[in-house]
Length: 386
Image (cartoon, rainbow, N blue to C red):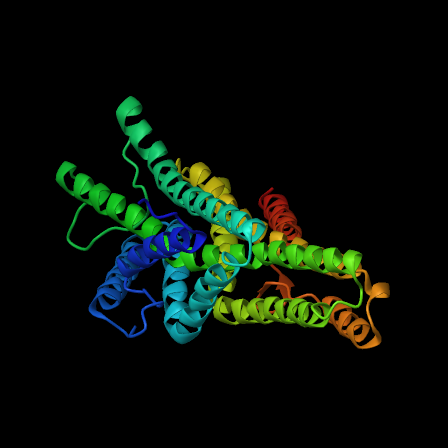
């Protein structure tokens, strides 16, 4: 007899994919016995080597062309972002595991409550799978875009351009042999960096998207409450259900607080490094010829808005919780239950937003502010040059 697939089974599969991907860069922080390991050590050494090559590139050319500082800074901002994200993951392994196991228990609990809950959890599975695929495509296509300009110019015009300004000592890019070795190293850096950033971001996708999903369970619980109230507003099941709804709302708030804690440095580094990468690339475009600047700046904007869209969805979810609490038929409840609903309303007035460095909310509105600031700064530099 064929066993029926449950939402928890699908979630375990998705969690397994996340753990395998993150273990390849040494940060399977959901592992109960996670600790610093040789894989993360190797990754850190590789990043350090990349920084040394970048410093060497500056040392080699800065006396004749100071703009090499900008050439190096644009891609190295990605390496800095990856380093901070990896260190951030290693700061809170117990908290990452706690949140992941909480999600496992939520799937197991609510798939057994009823068909409508199980159906909603299957929708979570599907949405989560789509988000992981979209994230993978974003980073993979970002890598391909970085390669387009140098390869196109080499094939059709014979011009030699590096994918990233990162040269190795004792390898002369002016020679055929040295150029192809450097290009091979650049290719390796680009694809490894893309996978590393994706592996670190998998936990952001996992937890922030589930933060968005929590309202679905809340709405189903409120629907169950209204159904009981329609039948008999003196039913003994009402008080436990009201308390359960309040506990679920409190769990949602606590979950967002924990997300803010574990993602503080990851989100801050992502937004800051991406913004600085955009700025330095725009300055390069104004000051010199770098064919790879245009696809790179497009990639940076995609990365910037990718995170901010997730933050905006959390903002929307906060509003949904607030509206959902207002929609509870409080006038059919007794005094003590009305006070519980009132307390939930009070808490919902101070939404738990995902923030950037604890200052600005992570949202599309913040991304637009950053874009306007970049535009203003670039216009000022252009006027200064004139």
